[in-house]
Length: 158
Image (cartoon, rainbow, N blue to C red):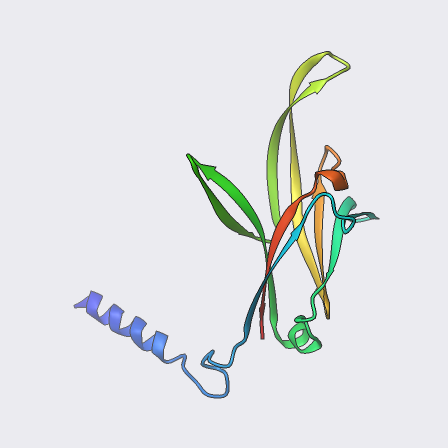
């Protein structure tokens, strides 16, 4: 009996959210855009900030981010990665901001041997009317524009 009561309360809550004048979600506009920024592009620029240190950013013009969207809407951003599971490559979306911890087995010329190095990559974004900045920062190894190749998915709701 308690389970039935809980189900009824949940159903009432779900259906009580319907409203008028866009409050029911029917007037919401959803725009999904994908941006692939290859490593060979000149769009990646190095920058320095007192708070962030060295980082790379790519400024992209997005006309769908209007002043109204900036003031009253929502802009979400995801890093799209491709993961191998056996013989299948599966795309995954990770919401930004995102910090990825990496381990690399690199050759150390000074000691003439391989060592494991741990570092992190931080992905985030900034939005302004008409633009979005994708930002990537590496904690240790020092990325270069030639190594960055990223796909971002931007979701705009207004």
